[in-house]
Image (cartoon, rainbow, N blue to C red; front, side):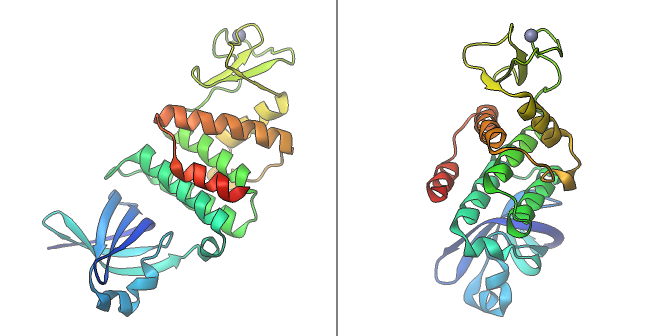
Length: 247
Ligand SMILES: [Zn+2]
């Protein structure tokens, strides 16, 4: 039996049997893995609270013939405001769902884990608008996943002289000028293009430090939702649920 020490964020926690729990954990060293917590005793010993959803901590795992068992979790951040707000919790569940789909099981990806942690922190403690957080998370996840949208030049003719007419094209992965636009391109504004540039290129810690009008946020929010779902090739029930809660 090998012991593995890592750090990770619990992105799913399900009780089963009389006193067992199965966790999906986004770890630094092993990527996203499933691991069991066995027995009421472990849950009573403090692992109960420590093995809840969206707990981030130092984790001791034991590998028994390829099955992982949680031995210990030392909580570093519990993101407890999520438990007190169903809208925030549902948004966080959507983020976890997106991250899991983008990264898959067993693949290390520290940049996605860091993005997820930074975004949870922003909605819990920095009062960041939830729709803005969703937009930023979706675009940054696409960018670190290799789908960085082009937002300086027209992706078809390469011009950067837009003459006030700008479009975002989901399939082409970037902006189009008025001449190259296609029927299903989103019309965007210069302010939206600048905000998008900031979102995509700001340092990790500063991704939420910008101001944009509610028109720009609404516009980019519609684009980012389509963009990420197109690239991950699926829709998300957790997103539908979040939207229902937001109303
Ligand atoms: Zn063009």
